[in-house]
Length: 217
Image 1 (cartoon, rainbow, N blue to C red):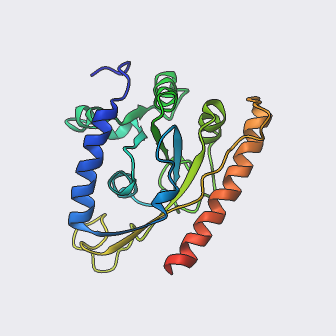
Image 2: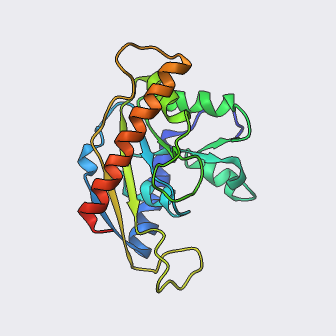
């Protein structure tokens, strides 16, 4: 596969099935609110990111196949053709990656699900610092955003494998209410995207707080 080849929906479905087998085989995901993900049409899943397991966990618990924007550093050795084969998108975070942008918009224009870590990289997983990319994709495509909180993936006590939560431990995946990022004007100016980013951050932070109360995490 080359970088210009559109992401495969069938590949993403294969990735979802692999994720289901691994995540439910190794841990105990508890999924709440999956019905809030629209059954069809374009949608952006905005996921908090505190652990390397968050992406695979969402792929295995989301009700639809997900195409994630993943940093190019992950595409090394045999992981490169594998990640491409399951419909994931390689993005160069050091520049404006037009190929990745085009592929992500293609996913949405074809009615698919785009997964984004709006914080850009792993951190506290609290949505404290958002990049403008999420607002751009949502406003440009008109796709609704569904906030997702993955809680418990960073659990350290009792783990046998370094970097992973204890096997068979519970990981909560909480889907929130879908919302529109834009203000209804259709504007795509820098000011409009900045305003959308503020609205998005408020919604994502609110969802995370609710998810923590709901799960006791």
